Image (tube, rainbow, N blue to C red; front, top):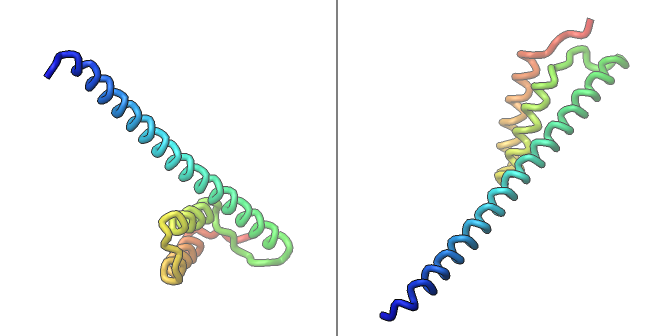
Length: 111
């Protein structure tokens, strides 16, 4: 084998490695951006849910309001089910049961 092929092979290998690392970086970045977006949606939904519960309580609705963290926990769990593609009746029932347990444990009475 002639020695002139060594730089050519090294250049090709370097280009392949550089291209693969670029694609891997883009995929990882997209994955984390998607996760960040789902969490932002969950936090916004939880905040809106909590504000609605507070407004209902002020206008004679339910007399107990769970803390915001309970709402966040529920909505993050909901987004995880969506992200995993596991949005089934069983998964939602388990999440609701967990939410109800959290609401009972951490709810504060309106005085």
